[in-house]
Length: 178
Image (cartoon, rainbow, N blue to C red; front, side):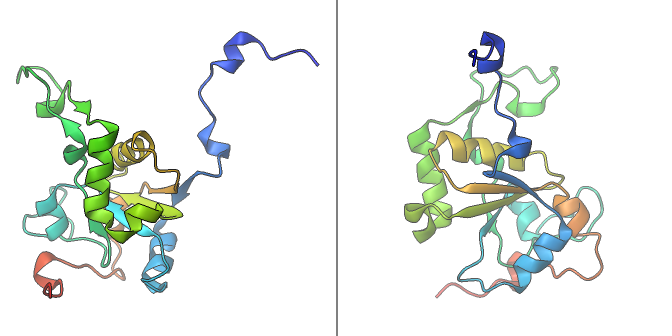
């Protein structure tokens, strides 16, 4: 057969059919909560640490905290701030920020994932406030060279915190470090 046209060869991969990327729904998170913590995927939360900890109110007025057992890696930790920032421009203080180097990203993920980082968990689930900044974690994992399957929970905290039957952890409810 004839080779595909040049334009088709340069098109980005269709992630909707890729086995590496998947979407989680609230029932997936409920199932994750019921799974054995030693064998379930890692759930990384990209929200700022105070929102994850529940030490500040949720900006949308939902319950504060995080999914019990999830880990915090604020998406801003993956970014180098812009050299110059004009506060009059849209995009907030991170407009023009760049992703850290692959080595720096590997170090960040290793610090959060601990032993899991050396063996690259088979699946990492990613969450945030509304499904947007978790995508920054997916990009960072890819640039860092992780070949794990990535599941994005796009309902994220907005959906989870509104459900009456979902447990919430806060920094005050975490077991003390030994």
